[in-house]
Structures are given as C-alpha cells and as structure tokens.
Length: 112
Image (cartoon, rainbow, N blue to C red; front, side, top):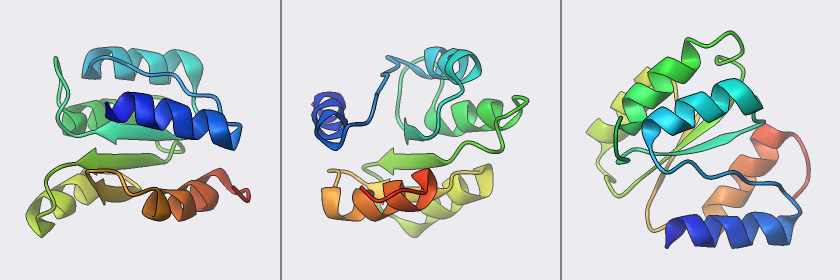
C-alpha cells in the first residue's frame, strides 16, 4: 500500500521511482542505479533497513545518497539508531506527505 502511494505521489511530482521488494535488492539497485534519494523502509524482507543502509553507505557513492528512513516505529530509540546508522531523515508511518515534501526539496535541492 505504501509503495503504491509513493509511486503515485512521485508520478504526480514528476519524479521517477523504482521500488525494491526487499533489502538485498535495494542495495543492488542502489549500486546499479545510483539514485538521487532513497526511501528506506526499516522493516523489509531479506535484510532490514538498517543493514541495507549500512551496506549502501559502504558503496563507492553511498555516502552521498540521501536515505530517508520510513518506519512504523515512532520511538526516539529507533529513530536515533537509524540516524546513527546513516539515514538522512526519519519519517514515521503512515507516511505524511506534508512532512515528506520538505525533505524531498532539501535533499533533491529543488522546489517540489
């Protein structure tokens, strides 16, 4: 459900989107596609979002890619752990578009 919402939102904003079905595929796609930004679900199959973030950060261009964590965990402990791992921002689910848009503008460096 969230994936389709993100896909529809990005389409409306004129942004391209690719969706990985699990953490391992997400790391592979980050390596191959070199995206401008990653929305990272913290609870995904195969490899959780924290480990996927760590592996992306270890890629040659991985430290440059903004990674926005998405999680149903709204507790500060989970947020702090994600931020220490290297995410650029943390948003609680359900996704609030009014909170996402300023983050997209900041990290994509363009008006949305």
